[in-house]
Length: 212
View 1 (cartoon, helix red, strand yellow):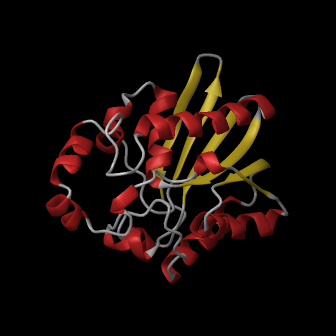
View 2: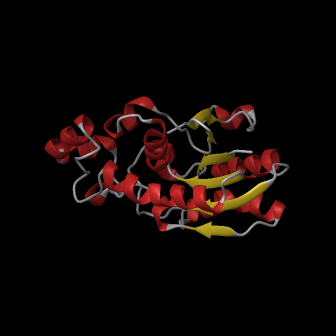
């Protein structure tokens, strides 16, 4: 039996709705975000879960809570699963950053693996800390089903790292909408992407909400 790693992005927040940069900020889920979390829990509680690893932020904890309460699982918090740190861009709109941090913004767009948001974190740094959590999971759970509840950039970087995709292209190659699920299966030949950005477990009205 192989390890199935389920990567769940947190539900909608005010920043995922508006597109503002949110890494270290700690907003709650919106009402719709809470509905997304409930929908995930109901749809996936029958899976034989071995563990649930969670970024220690309000939005990820609230997303994991319905499932964990339904199955009686304890959340295992890991700092390495937190979102990319956006530094001085935290809480700002894309338009404001583009106008007021133009040089840093253009460098970040061209090569985010090595160029950080102003005062923030590179994708390489994010990959370094997140990969330690993935390695811990692989060592502790060589088979079974493990859920990771994390963030948009973090999940995209984890997927790039596992699938051999250039980290500098994590924003261009992979999309994970709010509360979407991606699954990687670890087999004899290494990690295989089985599912990407799935939100089919939600009602149609939730699925049409902004996926940012």
